[in-house]
Image (cartoon, rainbow, N blue to C red):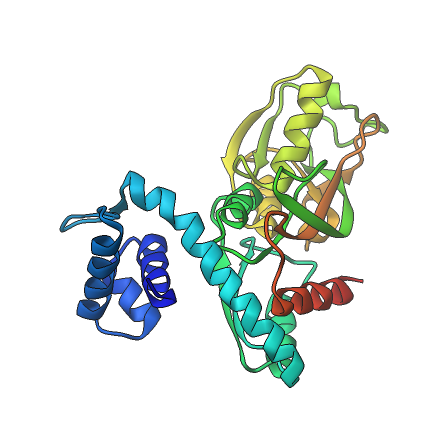
Length: 294
């Protein structure tokens, strides 16, 4: 059994396609199929269920996947150690981020990192499932680090370096019944329709916890995945929202207020797995992101 067997297997498992795996590995598809068959023969078990429409992991494949990733991580760690001695970082970094991270210029950070460490290949993934979707990929080993919003205690198996916190403010359309009130409390919002984010996003987690603690349910009428677009839906009368101020680029037609009786903060951090040591390249990128945020 060789590392190449694991590399090809992990590529097919993550891409769920022999064609996409071959493109990712820069080899022909028949070569990928041949390596997977060799691995299955050596292990004496079928690892992948193949059909004309999809590729899925068998039970044996599910059991092998984290161990195959672990073997590749260990090999990469060995390369990193030698690379540090030789004076340069190498390898591949798999980075997760949210659909919109307005407070950090992700392209600029990655550009700076690339200029300093050109031998490190950067693979960026934008999660449509919010911060909890990124956490799942950190735990299963398909990401090395992620820029995410994880309020409260980090999930098991994850370490988070908090970068910043922003106060969340109530965003109302002009003319709303609460627009003229001097003080707005969380109970005043119990019957409102909200513009919010899907479950798993940091903003949604903060608000769901706050309303649950206050004993109120919330109704969400519009779900958005781009934090900078939420205020536009509020302006059009589709609901109210609770957002960090940077997400409200144009206050025309909007009223911003604090919710007086509850602490609402949106955190942003960089997360890594606590189950395996980050590579030298991952540590360098985490340090750069932290420096940039500071």
